[in-house]
Length: 196
Ligand SMILES: Cc1cc2nc3c(=O)[nH]c(=O)nc-3n(C[C@H](O)[C@H](O)[C@H](O)COP(=O)(O)O)c2cc1C
Image 1 (tube, rainbow, N blue to C red):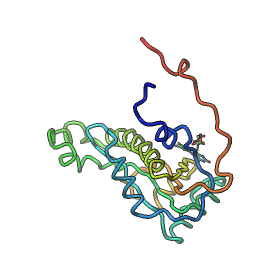
Image 2 (image 1 turned 30 degrees about the horizontal axis):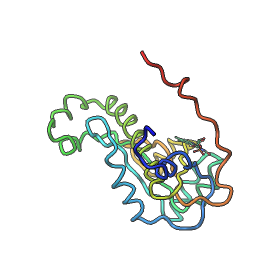
Image 3 (image 1 turned 180 degrees about the vertical axis):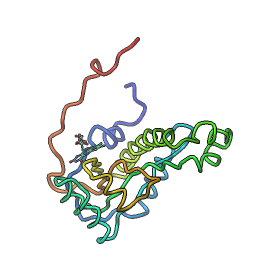
Image 4 (image 1 turned 135 degrees about the vertical axis):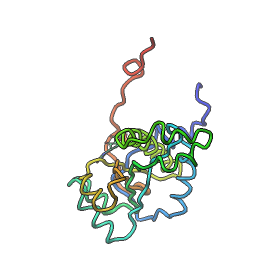
């Protein structure tokens, strides 16, 4: 009764949504990814810094190179998923800040002139955006399979550069047969929330 989002949308985004480990052959189109991005780009980040970058791995040759950097247990599903995305944080996001935060363009130099500060901010805010992205995939009626069981240094050298830090690899598609493990329990409210 306290939520205003309708029950079907609650189920689609959270209650019934699962982390998929198998997928059907149905392709995931660029139009679907664009619709997902055009929704989740509105999720908030500090100073609107928006450091998430998304690399879609589409060609069979690139998929093969990606799979080599996945942990053993993640390889078969990453090879078979209709689409795989590498989510990374742009540590040079501050270059875009005058455009993204136009009412206070001085923020770029006042807060983000030092690389270690940028790396911390980029990791936090791109991870937030990665979470929005997973929910956006669900909003498109698709399932996401996020993975951090990855050789990140190898992945960075293979697909990115020194200015980008890979955060996770996400399989995307419609769930296939036996797509998920049994639902694991979640922590109860009382254990998580304290009031002071
Ligand atoms: C950031 C992140 C990293 C994950 N890494 C892996 C992984 O490397 N391999 C894997 O099989 N599952 C991975 N998972 C899947 C989680 O175990 C799964 O989302 C969680 O248990 C909830 O499952 P459910 O959505 O089916 O309830 C990852 C999930 C997230 C969000």
